[in-house]
Image (cartoon, rainbow, N blue to C red; front, side, top):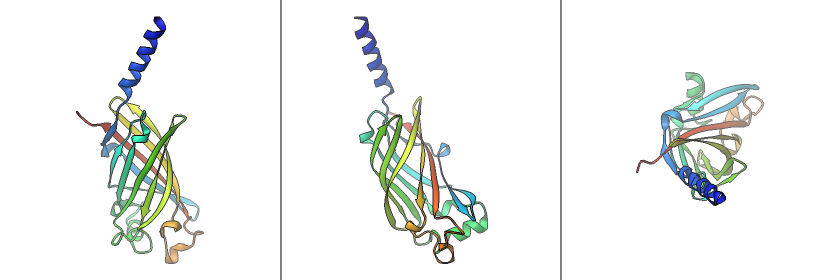
Length: 184
């Protein structure tokens, strides 16, 4: 009888924690990157983005993510750098105003998660797998992770900037997305 009571309490407590998180908390979220110029790390970030996320750590198969980044909100560290990366050789924001990630599936394993999906930058789409962790707190979750991409695969940095000895091909993308439960 005592064993049944303990099992019932454990099952009941796991149901209490089974929540779906779907409301982006923009002020607590960020999308950033690190590139290397002449082997020196250069940090940057995007100031404007939106995300539609559905995440339940107990039902990852139902999870979805769609993230759109306003490329004009890039901050590459200086006004001169920002003007350069918005231009035709880099992101060409006049023609390609947004970059986006859309998940095709989310799976869990070993306390970590992985979102598979399509990353589109400059109208070039690549399949990617994005590992992340989820920190669950009362009524909210913080999803944090990142990937390394090849800028050349997306046509980022052409012309005089195509030389990977000046600006490395690899770029680290990082995200921290805070999402809350929807009010019922």
